[in-house]
Image (tube, rainbow, N blue to C red; front, side, top):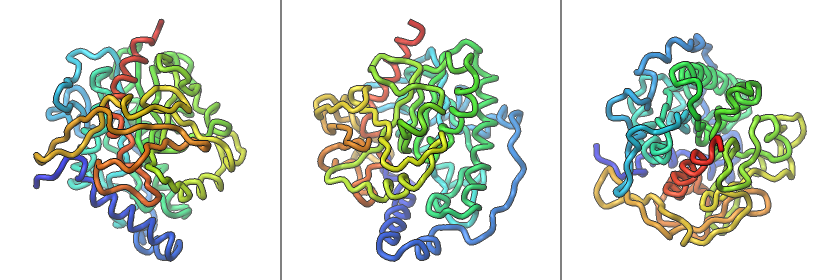
Length: 368
């Protein structure tokens, strides 16, 4: 069935809007009843690295036909022989409460995942070949409860991602530059990959062009040191980490801050009051402000179904005092912003052309 590009996430975002609105109005019990799985977590066999040699366990990799990460808007093309390899971890696309973790063969989930790759991972297809694994992702409701089953679901999902990452490392040349990127749940798992692999393996850390931990908070004081990479401070810096969370103004990020301030950082200290890493994707630097004229292109749903157009000069950006990325008045990129003017779904598409240029610039600086 034909759908407008980027609108295909409507079902997912509808649940998010409904769930977060119910949370504000009625509290935890109602939202849990609506979105959190009722079944007990079912332990499953851990993924093996060898299983990820099978192309069927990947949404994108260089040898897959109809690779969704190779999509580009008019005027852009993927590189024929890109220098880097990109490991991309997609956001949550499993939206039911039937199970804590998505079955790998769920057709609707896989279709939504492909759409996410077209709107997000495609930004990297000039700098590198994109590898994006299927994984038994935690369902959306796992992020709305503190139940132990939610942690188990995320741990199972991470096990798949880690196995895929090891298979990815084995498949690409040992001296090839690497770009790591994720969004939302994908960034949750990317943080753990950074802690478990990059921070502990200097030979791997030296290969990292950049890590894009987008759509998930990273505390400068409590988290950054454990991730093995410094914050990107210059637009041409390599071997560093970028992160942002997009809000239109007036912004109300209280739903995120209320949870964030109650959590413990990777160093064991409280995140309360700490500033989050905020990279302005229009400048490639932290804490900077840039006008809409600096935006090289935002993806907008187009009149023809299944496509999108890229419009420059539409969306400004600046970092606020806590580290949220503010984008001015709400842009007309789709009707699925979350409560509080949260443009989480559009974190990449708002700045698609600038993210592309950022990856290319950091790759050019790599090894200099």
